[in-house]
Length: 263
Image 1 (tube, rainbow, N blue to C red):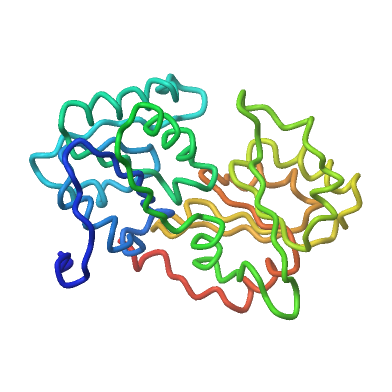
Image 2: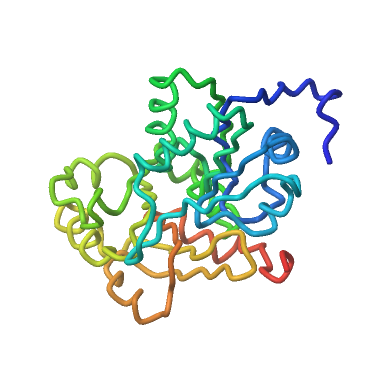
């Protein structure tokens, strides 16, 4: 365990909530503050994508509550999760809200922080490594490369009801950056690809899908934007992060990660 005093890490006060990013999967990507919180929390409220090995790092006495959202299955409502965090804090608990990736990147951490602020609950936000950075790195795909791109657009692949975002300005997204990174986009990838191509993206543009990034089950599928419909035939499963742009092709040279290393 880390030496919190030597690092000067802050106190995790009773009656407060820490919104902590657990990273994309590999427990080795946890931050020092995340480990510090796990070692002190009285209650851990965690998302579906948090690795069980990470949960095992918490105190044995800490309660653990599954607040994960799962597509197609009954899941906790966001207002109920926020209310639960507030209740646990008012009961004097050190509450660790453990979220996959980074809590502030398509993680609804902002909504939970606003609810805590409105309720007068002290909180801290602890960033984590988001899949659009860490997941691509484990696939040997740089998010930026000096000779390819100096801008990136991060996009969520669906709206609140789970459908594809028809009201989104896909023409602006298509023109906005040489590299696009899609979160939660696997279900609607074919429709999204069609919109991007209609907006001017090249169907031959490289595209990579990284499934279960940084874990022992990681799978990388390299293709083109125009062949997005074939993704379903490859047996690729969520969670997945998708990158569109010339950086995806670098996977062929920079594919360093051996998934068995995390077993």
